Amino acid sequence: MYRQVVSRGTRPSLFLGKAYHAGCPPNPGAGSLELIPHNTVHTWTDSLDSKKLGYDYQQVDIPWLKVNHRRKYPRSAAKQAHDQKYLSFPLTLSSIARTTVNRPKQESRSDQEKEEVLVIDIDYDKTKGIRFDVLINDQGDDQIRPVHSEFAGSFVSLAHSHLHGDGSTRTSTSFSLGITNLLEDIEVKDDDSIVVTLVPRYGEKYVTIKGIKIKHAALEDENI
Image (cartoon, rainbow, N blue to C red; front, top):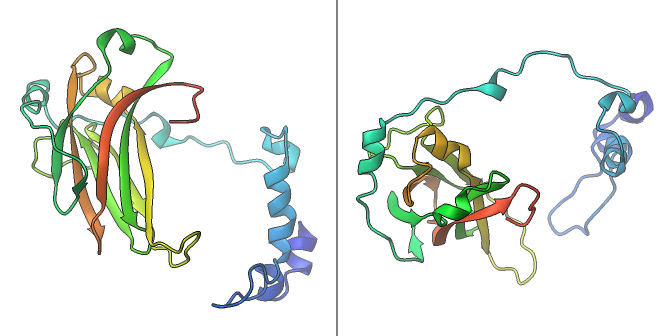
């Protein structure tokens, strides 16, 4: 570590790698830390115990690991949220959008080894930064924050100027959120549907929502 970080890293180009300018061929030359130990750590196996790698973390409490979110709305209000319409897709997320999403059938929800997953298919311009929040059974007042149980998560993408493949600035992907614990927290785990609210937070160009669905995924399933 001393050799890679200190004695071989006496200059920025030696430590961080050679400068990469627009129009230059890729991979002009990696720095000392990039090659070893960075790449070594990527290829290392059987080292779940960091002490085998020669370091350890201080044993301290992790306050966020067992945090309890508080519900913004009472159970009665969550029920009222079901009086919503089904939106048609695709739609342009130019403002707050709320839609009812049906859940899997009751009998298939009893398997404790499966996670209920909210899947949002999206298309956007990857050269522009974007963010939108996902809320479950809110009341449309835009007051839900990450501290609340109804807050499911956020999709965030930084602006990327480099293009690949056909050079298109558009990209399509899916945003998956595990919601089993959330539905239990807001006491709607036995409901047949939920209301999903998408709140655009920033972005010069709007995101296209191609579809929203809920599916089940086994705990070991990596293809959600």
